Amino acid sequence: MKHVVVDPVTRIEGHLRVEVQVDEATGKVTDALSSGTAWRGLELVMKDRDPRDAWAYIQRICGVCTTAHALGAVRAVEDALGITIPKNANYIRNIMAATLTVQDHIVHFYHLHALDWVSPVEALAADDIATANLQNTLLKDYTLPFRAPGTSVTEAYEHDFPAATPQYFKQIKEKVKAIVESGQLGIFSANWWDHPDYKLLPPEVHLLAVAHYLEMLDKQRELVTPHVIFGGKNPHPHYVVGGMPCSISMEDGNAPVNTARLDIVDRAINMGRSLVNNYYLPDLLAIGSAYVKAGRVDGGGMAKTCVLGYGAYPEEPFSGTKNGGFFKNLLIRCNGVVEDFGKGLAGCKVTEVNGEDFANRKVFTESVDHSWYEYPAKSEDALNPWDGVTSPKYTGPKEGTATEWKALNETGKYSWLKTPKWNGKLCEVGPLARYIIIYVKAKKGLLGELTWAEKMMMDQIDAVSKVLGLAPEVWLPTMVGRTAARALDCQLAAEINKYFFDKLIANIKSGDTKVASNEKWDPSTWPKECEGVGIYEAPRGALSHYIAIKDGKTDNYQCIVPTTWSACPRDDKAGHGAYEMAMMDTQVKVPDKPLEIVKVVRSFDPCMACATHMFNAKGEKINVITTD
Ligand code: NFE
Image (cartoon, rainbow, N blue to C red; front, side, top):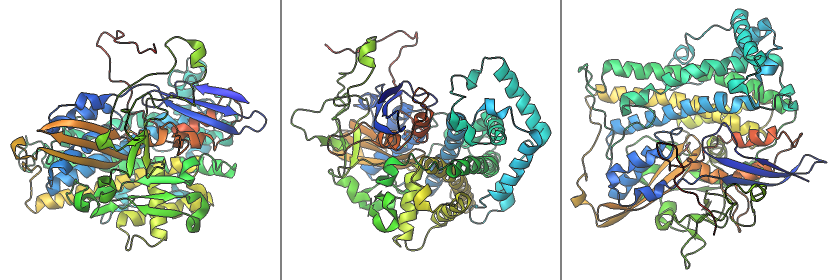
């Protein structure tokens, strides 16, 4: 048995350490541990703040899923105070969310995950003509032609990106060759390029994906311009409780939102659609089918036992969970939990998640059995976030003690993440969870008539099943399935972006330019005490922000973020977390180069939500936490 530690796991946001026990004879991972090694602590910064300012502070949790936590915060406050936002604000928030999803998934696939699958070193052996032919064949064979209702196919595919010619690929290859031969691989350094996994793909697929890796470095900036138009900037665009802060006037050339600026938004949205259709989907399917052909249907883990979603894209302007508001008219009804998907459609069970589940303090809880926190002496072993306590108590290895850092104590506390639970169970969240939930709900006839977006999800699953030659029940709950579901989610979000943009334009044209409501803005109109929850299907999955307001101030603030669900440490009653389960569903060929482990962990798109927020401008050490 070999004990393998990866610390830090790189190419992710934040600080993550994983440890596995590998059976050297079989390559099987027999035990796994996932540890968040930095404290977020932003909950404590929220104490006593004006709830109307919460979005501005709490959004600083993360610059990757920027906008996610601001949306969670405004929805939580609006839920607590019973505020309904104007239609335009709801459309704009949905555009902000879809824009984030498109950009975030593209950046993850190309810049954070691709090099687990493809190698610049292998790319050097590619033939330029064969690579150009491959891109054109992939486009023909692997195009999944979906689009938002009422829009044209051309619009979703046309672009002014470089043509896939042999000259283009020759140029790219020369660029990559110069980097490799310099011996200073820069962005391509410190990878296990001689790992046998890279031999699963032909050199042309390596060159194709590496070329697109470089292209996307440039494109990602333009994709987020809708955030700049509607929210003033990116990262961390502005929001306001009651709506959005961007006034609309089509005629006024200086208005934050006018005809010219909406044109820029439209261009960015269409660019997202064509990037995902022309590059992301074909590249992903070329890689995924090679892996499936090689029999790599591992890494599913908890996707086979328990996945959770909250539901996405409210069509109507309800922020709140009370009286079912948020759940009344969702474009994607992935609010639910699917258990035992690994047993197939007949063997799995689906449970709805709705407003009552948030009101019932026993359904969603967090425990700290293995986390560096303490709960008050008499409290239950798991607390609902409204009663949540953030009281750090570090008992891990001391700084600089190499022996202690060799292995974290898995029977004791080993992570800065808490362990969130749904009805006492741990769940995986994210694009894969959303696709499994919609697939199961639709197949079991629980959705009635599908919305256009749900229908698109079912068609996407069908199309990928044909390309991979496997049933959805087989390919979805795997590492390839997790990475493929994110690509499908990206294509879906790109179309949803267009859908809400068209709705926004139609509504403005009808004469409605209202973007914010000042209903209940004045704290003297608020109840003495109230509570709210803001929910959002963030790129990485189900996100909830809980706020308790007392005397006009924030009395308690707790967030359960997607990465906490998936990366959490184990729970004494409920077992291992989703990262741990996925690692234990993985084979390792070379224990000293555990590429399969970092690849399966990165298939979740980890964001350790998000690192430490304590630093001083001179970079000096502020505090050292040690055990006494
Ligand atoms: Ni910092 Fe996030 C997303 C949120 S955390 S990236 O998506 O919310 O998993």
